[in-house]
Length: 96
Image (tube, rainbow, N blue to C red; front, side):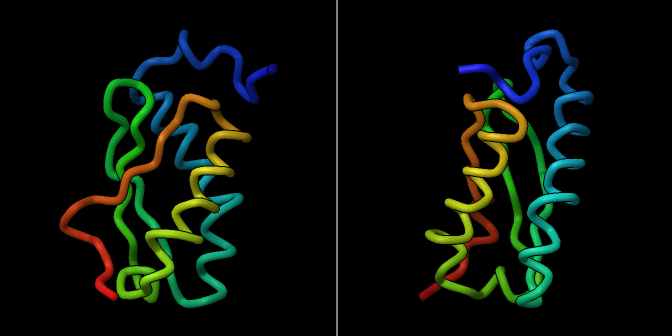
């Protein structure tokens, strides 16, 4: 499978974070914003674990751990790199 960004391994940590943020702003933020929610990229750990924090409606929505998380994971895997795993910040998990 060809990666969306085959030069991923050559990018610095900051360049990887910047690329992830560009994709989030272009592909993910508009969809979440339509429902009053949002997401912040907190960090990239070990080059593949993307830590996020939900904002707005997403911060209190039980679907944030299922459908929304799956959507974010799918977009980042397909648009940035298939090795990325999205993990919500433990201090920012919605309760059901």
